[in-house]
Structure formats: structure tokens, C-alpha cells
Image (cartoon, rainbow, N blue to C red; front, side):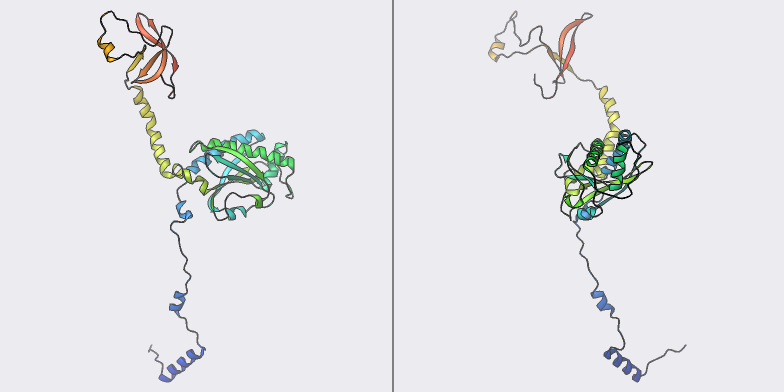
Length: 327
């Protein structure tokens, strides 16, 4: 097929059409220059949060097991608790997901600074209240405000959850959970500023007649002081230490140490010591009824009473000396 070549008249006509706007020209260079450019902050919190809180998976696995047993016993029925999701979001976006009313429990995590939150979806809240009064927990046909009595019953549920959450946190870090206030309206809940990041964990609670979700919201800034203890690296080091703990314990049991029972002490000057002769009597600071101190490698560990067993001198241990006690 022969290549078609435009004549000079056709070229001139095409150029005139381009100048008049009859023919549209796609300027790739101009389009590329107008492409939207978004800045990316390498120090942003969303990037820093990756893999920093792996220990929370271990905490919440323990929490699920504890809540399954504790909640099932409290409600006297079979309950199944599962993790639904976990994500890092802005607090403002997190709060927008809740309607009015929702059961909110705001609590502190001592010694950490700040407040965290437990949220109970309304359908689940009414079902749990019905179960507490001996019902089957069937959902209400229409959501309404919680009465004062219903809020008190929800408060019992909050305390049960926080108790199990405190026990679960022991696998990573010892924290004391204290409930500060309860609320039912999202607009009255203020933990941090709307743009601050929070860690959101969602758990489903399922019974025979009902199901629903609870949400645990913890601000990132609240966990910042202990983030090193919640990292995957710290978990690996802890697992390695635990792996050798039993072997080290067995080795320590066979280690020989020097134990000395100290009958008493006294203080003299060098001149008095140099002047001592055979037959001199040295008084000590303890009497026959006073306990003696037993030192292990020079460290006071026990108190005991001296005596004789089968012709051998011995000391019977009567008390343990704690680290803050002196001799």
C-alpha cells in the first residue's frame, strides 16, 4: 500500500483549521504539566505507625478469650466474641460512624496520659440490656434513647469489658483501667482533636438471638510512650528470652553459692584489736534469743535461729529478708 502524502494546499487548509479552532489539538506536554502533584510527608504518623503495635494483636487475642468466658458467665448464655477489623483512622472520621444514641465509655489507662473509649452499637446495647433482665436479647424494632435504668445496666457491661481488657493487657504492659464517664451522644465525646490518629479495634458479639459490634478506640499519642514495648521487635526479643528461661532456671539450680550464718557483729579500733590477748572476751551485738543473719554470697537473705541437729551446728530459717530491709 502506497504511503499517502498531503499536498501543499491540503497542508495549508489543515493549518488554517487549527488556527481557527475547528480542529482540536491534544497537547500532551501541556496536560502533563497540569497533572496534579500531591506532597507526601515521609514523617507522617500513618507511615510511622506501621508494625509499631504488633503486641496489640496478642493483647486482643487474650481479650477475646477472656470476654468469651466472662461475658458468657455474666449473661448466663453462650456468647461468641470475634475480632472484625483493626485500622488507624482520624478521630473525626471514627466518630462519624456512630449514630445517636450509642453507648460510650470513656476511660483512662494509667500510667498513660489521656483517655480512650469503648463504644457499643445501639442494637447490641439494647440486646445486652434485655439479656441482663432475663430476656432473649431480641433487637428492638426501632432504636430510641436509653433510659436511666438502661444506662446503668450498660455501665455494668462497660465495667466487665474494662476488667477483661485490663487482664488482657498484662501480656504486654501493666495498665490500670479506670472509667471516667459515660455518654450516649457522639457530639459530646472528645478524646483528641478530629485530625489526630486513633487505633480502632472492632469486635463482634454474637448470641442466639442477637449480634452487634463494640469498638475500642485508643489515641496514638496515648500509646506513644510505650510503643517500643508494643513493637514486633520487642515481641521477638521477649520470645527469645522466654525460650531460654527454663534452661537458665535449671542451670541456676545447680549453681553452688556460699552461705554464711552471721552470729553477730561488733566494732573496735585498731588499737583495741592489737591489744587483745588470749582469754579476752569480745561482746557482739546479738544475744542468745536474737535471730542470726544468713548471707548468700555476702548478701543478707534470711533470718534464722541457731541450734544443733544430730550433733551438727545448724540454723533454722525463720524469715526472708526483703530487698528494702537492712541488717
